[in-house]
Image (cartoon, rainbow, N blue to C red; front, side, top):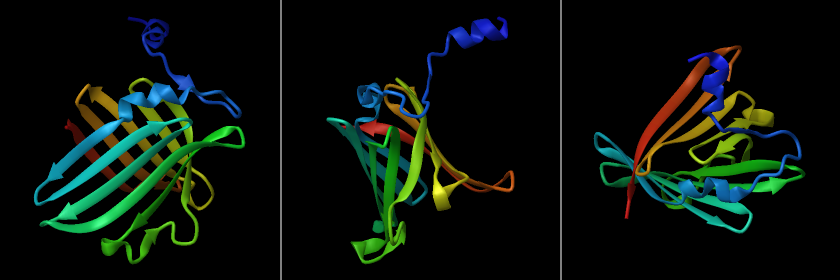
Length: 161
């Protein structure tokens, strides 16, 4: 299969400034997703309402909360911006996004994939969600500096009722 033919199989929206996005294309994110690793697990719950996608992520280790993250994808001045804040146990202290939410711009989206890239202080941060099957979701967040990945974390989620 030649390269041009292979590209024809991929229907991906490359978002340009002020590009319209029907947020419903991200409906596959909705629901409760669970990723387990050793004694720890991360649970994400996603809800699509109106023109926004809301995510709540909770991480646990040995039956104790380690973090809670709030994520909100909404249109902002012609772009789609994902804002997030991460809190420690008990919501006592913001771990990331202390003074203002971290901001990432949605740069790719389709019916099985979305990618956001960091803005401002988060430049170099990339967040990618990919639907591998109707009940399997892969997530990867990474930070690149000077062309080198300095931090990366991956999750394999299973959809749960």
